[in-house]
Length: 194
Image 1 (cartoon, rainbow, N blue to C red):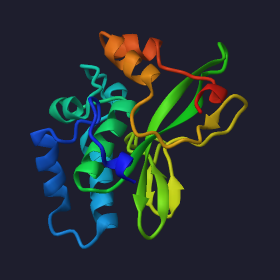
Image 2: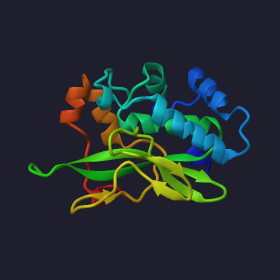
Image 3: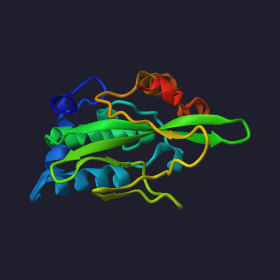
């Protein structure tokens, strides 16, 4: 589990603001599941999805997501992993491959998390942010994610990553604004994600 507690350039949980926020969210918590729920709800509800509000800048590092209070799903998953790890709760990054445009057969990755809870083991959680018909919840051991995998070409990628996929980091760091990112969302064929 130690690898799912490490800091890295993107999951920079040793940043003072992340440590402070993580401590505030854990204050008075009876157990890890309660702390994990609070971290999840903070990222889901207090850090808006950039596209929902049409808000720049494009963020990537967890500390930048917290500072600017916005991020695409990938960036929000980076912040959630950082908050959980700062509270010594093992957390990883997960991805789904979803159909973006059926006419042009365009797909993109969707970023979410997995958290390890002693009572349940690994559970995937999705702090993308609720909007319209999207209703992601924290209900271990069940998974209530933002998007179901439905059609051909879509997939729940099976791995729990300790660091973000390079294709995700490159897309976030390359994009000058949310519109540029929306036109170049990262994608991988499921067979290349091992």
